[in-house]
Image 1 (cartoon, rainbow, N blue to C red):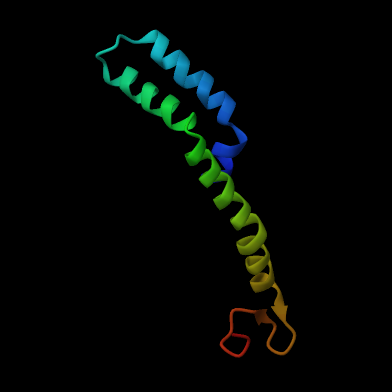
Image 2 (tube, rainbow, N blue to C red):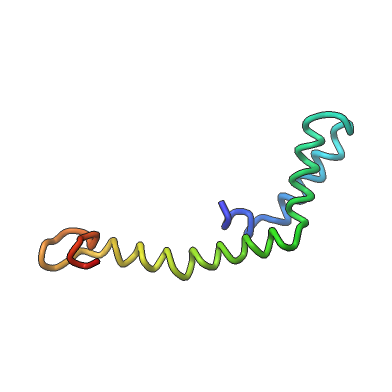
Length: 84
């Protein structure tokens, strides 16, 4: 989810602006579009998204790739108590 937001932020801003433009002010669709637009323009939220995205790329992906390797002694994945 975070990767999607980081990658497609500009497109979501355009979609949210179109939703706002197409609907009256007191409609739920307008409110949802306004919330999406305002949240995507918050610098601190975007910075947190970038942090989480980087953390996943640098830590979790490498760990999960290691876990998927086969252990030579048992021919099973590395998720074993002996390795931990």
